[in-house]
Amino acid sequence: MLTYLTYFVLSMFVGREVISKVPPTLHTPLMSGSNAISGITIVGALVAAGMTEGPWARWLGVAALIAATINVVGGFLVTDRMLQMFKKKPTARLGGTPH
Image (cartoon, rainbow, N blue to C red; front, top):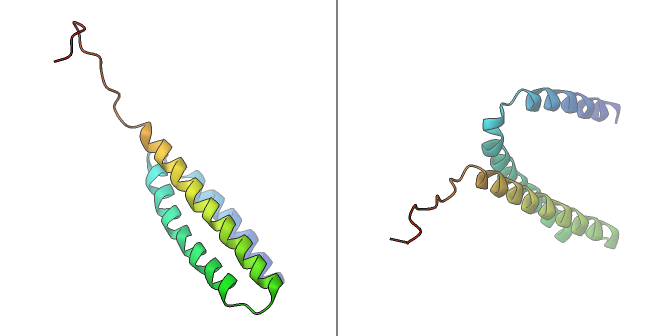
């Protein structure tokens, strides 16, 4: 158990250092890619919810499925909103009459 806790703490430090060095222009593609990878979590949650014998394990799998789905959908919504910032806004034509 201590080994797993050590791995977890070290991965938090490494993850923080790696993410803090990413320039802002790369955040959108990285976010989109990580959301696609997070879809694997949904598959794991489905397996956990469907292949268990006990009711507590099944409910825990369902809770994991809900949390993973919220994570993926929320991530894609944030990515979409970030991409909206880069779209050019339509400019108004001079003269007031549409052509």
